[in-house]
Length: 635
Image 1 (cartoon, rainbow, N blue to C red):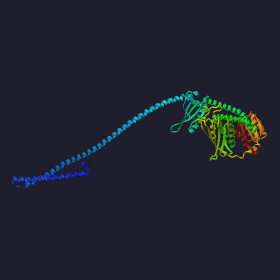
Image 2: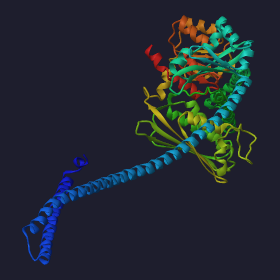
Image 3: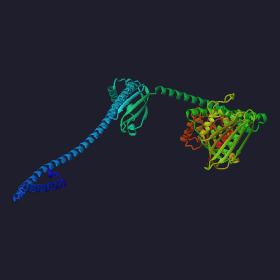
Image 4: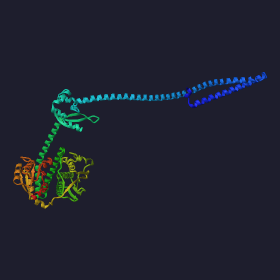
């Protein structure tokens, strides 16, 4: 069975070996038989001296019988030996295979042991990380618990009210202060209270739909049991971006509201005071400026009398400018400041600026120069009152700090690519100058350079000047050197307008055809305004009350209405409304007012097309009336 299992080559080798052994055994047996036969024959010959046939055949027969038996025995023996040897070889091969298998198994075991060691080490690491993670989580949980306690304390101790509700409106938490405010003990009572009190529930549910839709904060105010709360409603969104509830936070602003009411009341009282003061001061200023203009134009004063009269006029105008600064400062504080841009005569503006500047410098015996370069258009669009105020403040500031020397004004004009007019005013003096470290400070409110404090001045002129310059989209620049004077440069870009028709001497002829209704309750103002208008050739009817104005208007419709805003029986705005609504009037109306606190847009809503602030000057009045000369011609 084993031989069958052996390979073919091995079996062939064994067969050849067995046959070779048989052959060798047979040859050996035959050789031995022959040798015995030969020996037997030699012995018999020696002993008997005779050789018989039997002596030859007997050994051969015995050898023939014994040799095969011996060959069979040897073959059997050697077969067993071969089998044993083959078995040994087989066992050796099996042993080799077993050793190889055992070696592989051992190597595999060693490798597995290394893997096990690696896995064990990784397990230890993972176990360490796991324990470390558990420790960190425990620390985090402990910290979270501490923070939860801390925030719970804040939640409960805050003087504000806090309410947290789920997406469907269920109350999840609230602050103790909310419970105290609503006089309930717990959330259950709070839920019951809100279900019964619809108004109270609306305080907290207001804007839910908007918050859910936009997922943004919502802020509103509500008064709860006499306490004013500013309520902020914030959506609670989980990490997946889903809305899970709303957090309502209410801050007590009752004290703030009361203080705000006090501030607003104080501001209104301050504004009313300034408005009243404006009216009371501008009324005599209007008389001084207007009558001094009339007297100067009469030509009856010469030399010293004329200089004194000019000084009166300039002083009144300067006082008006100072008061304008105070009014504008109040507007800046109340954030109600605005500009009104309208077309105005540019050449006349520059002429008036030169005239006033020359009068102001003459009072201090300063030399004066006024130069204009570039082509001047007929009209530009801006707020000429604010522009004049800016320039007068800078000129007055230079004159105030120049004891001797000169004041020069250079006006340069250039056409921009967009068709606007770029204008730079360079106002230079030879006064005390300003140190570099003080040059930015002088634009501060109430600031005055140390060592230069004058007995006059408010300390707000340059602050208001810079604010007005910015309001007109202008730029202001300062160059100065102590002891050598100061130069202020302001630059503006103005829209250019063409005059509808040439002015000049023809203006007076047109103005003579105007019938003007003057509505003013102060006799001095009536005298000044009527005198100025009549000197321009106009016909003027005066009314001191609103009722009288309506009556005069009904009897004879004028071409223009000059309407004071404060009358004994009604306001100028009421008179304007009556003229428009009761009489269907389209006659242009100009407001005469000493109250420069009013928002300019208010006048337009009542059909008033322009505003003349007091004190009135002949130039401003003539310019305003001149705008409506075409109405008379077309009628």
